[in-house]
Amino acid sequence: MADGLALYAQVGYWRSESVLTAGGRYQRLRISANSDWALNLKPIAFYLGGMKAEQTAVFNGQSLDITATLDLSFP
Image 1 (cartoon, one colour):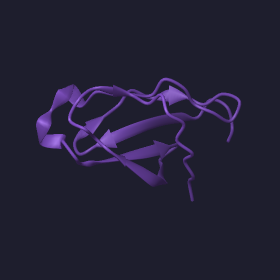
Image 2 (cartoon, helix red, strand yellow; image 1 turned 135 degrees about the vertical axis):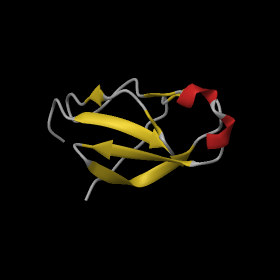
Image 3 (cartoon, rainbow, N blue to C red; image 1 turned 90 degrees about the vertical axis):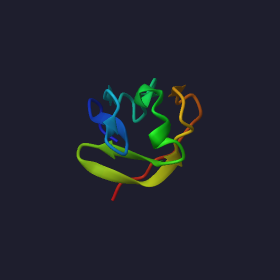
């Protein structure tokens, strides 16, 4: 993965702020979705340079920081 690519998450209508890749990684992707319970249990999609990752996560209806390692792959 090249450095300086923008990665963001999207849950329904809500989109996170982008973080930039560095050293083939990303850090501090924050998913808050304004604590909107209408988005509870909706899939979180991840995008890098306009490409959607094959992996998703599930939004828990609360603000969360992605601190776990998510190995994302893009077509």
